[in-house]
Image 1: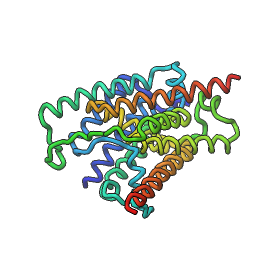
Image 2: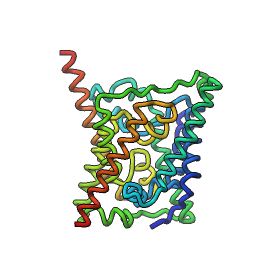
Image 3: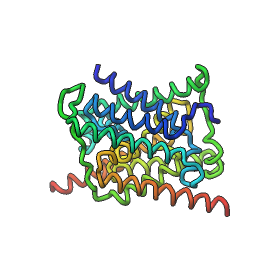
Image 4: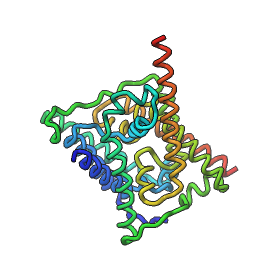
Length: 166
Length: 141
């Protein structure tokens, strides 16, 4: 399962913190990923919300997210000595927590993604925009959002684990 | 040219997310089951280092290297849906074992099961845009 290299948490965390600062310093843009999904829609949807200048005029977000895909591919290649292959399982924890029927699992994951996407917009950011970039600017709303992200995840997974154990 | 800079930053971000374990589903469940502090360590250190960096940028009144303009720090306001939205985000974060930033990196790693999550995030974003667009029209009429 772990065929990617995992660094100690503090080391990778420091790297992510430095990258966030370097990104802001070099480009002048504040790091944040979830709004990229609005930029994707700006290309295909005529809804006024997606046709705001905030989304039509910020094509860099799509390049950034494309880079993230490349970064993941790079990590997999490094971890597997140049061999990139498809993986189908989610690992021990989620194979136990989620339905074993593949269609049900896909439905749960799609719904979870939808709740996450809608929630990110309602909250005004995700783990990167609110927590990694937002809290360091001493933004109260970001700190509140970050805390509630954790509460939401904690309640959900504890509840699911409880139900599975029954 | 500028777009390439953004893509390079994205590549390093994706690579770091992988190295951090943010693309490994198990770590998310273990975080919320309070079994393994890997991701808590990652987030904690990233925020600490980030805070030091932001203070430095403010202190030296940094200018963006690409544009020469003074760096501005977004004031993210407490939106009306912040509390409900954050809890919803957290629920999705936990149940999918991923987040909007790590999901694209998982796709890059070849984790096929992330595709429904990504489609979900895209759909959830659309639902918000649809409601917001309707609301804007209602206000005008």
